[in-house]
Length: 420
Image 1 (cartoon, one colour):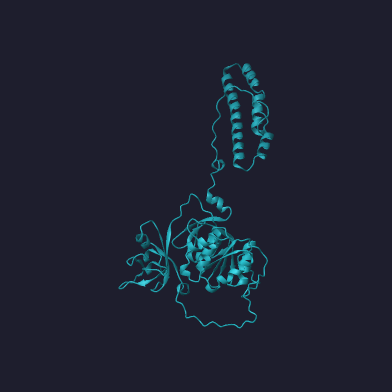
Image 2: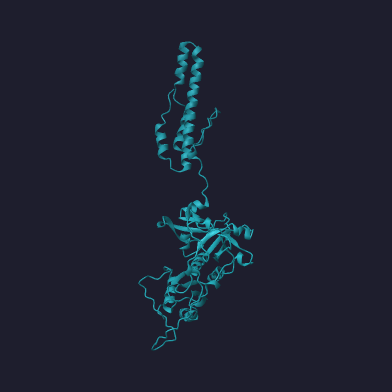
């Protein structure tokens, strides 16, 4: 039997096959159909040949000669359209024939699975945080509590953070920022942290315990009998001793003290982090200043257009003194006194930042936790934030200008800050 020369159409088909799954599947189906057509004609020829074997030689030869005619125009048209694509001409009706054999589609050519939300985030170096009692798992890698503690913002379970693969911290991609996004179908694990709890000895025993906190806001402070035992042998290498101040984390399943007893140490504070004893006030040296000016004169030219500026500082006597800085630029001043760190809660900072248009943090006299929370809530509420290295008129004025213009939060190293 003379077979239609389909080689050129087959080459054209392969050249026009794309690298996407749909194109590969279409090509696979076309090739399978071509094989079925050829098998069909081959089987028909073979069956007729065997059927004619009992006939005289002359008639059998004539029958075989008839079977060696070229493929029909209908089959040729079908084969051509399968190899080169659909035809604009109307389809020709053909007689019913045996159904083609079903060909198994390889797994690599099957329809692609639906991309998960985490896979879409990973395309932009965004990853979900799986917080642990100590540390966190991000992109299937463990970030220790020491790494998380160095960040300027807290990281909680369910947060989405942006990683910088080009900047490493202890061999891991650094965490650039925490976004305001969350996955709708992810239920964060509730972790409670007992902060600033002092380790105390248990008489007649080698273990230690925590029974209260410096903040007075934990489950241990609700009743004198609420204590949690801390076994030093569970934390080798930390050399736990009475008098140390720790953060103790536990999974909150609604069982109160029972859940707390199954917790673990998250962080051991350095003494300078929790020593709240006030030193005797040193006598202030009065500077002799000539030509004292009581009115603030602005040095930068910008207009806040009555937008609210929140200034967070730990220098209590300068909070109200910064008000003219904002007023001269036609803004509304709002100050937050953060000199007493234990009185500034996360919810209070969140509420203040939510109602402001710009956030200025003077970091010269505030606790590190305050700056972390301010940075965290400003990002969540998409509020421009800038850092003033000192609590002064000029530093705050320049910080407001950076926040207004979308410049980096920190001042350039060459920028001079005057104490006025």
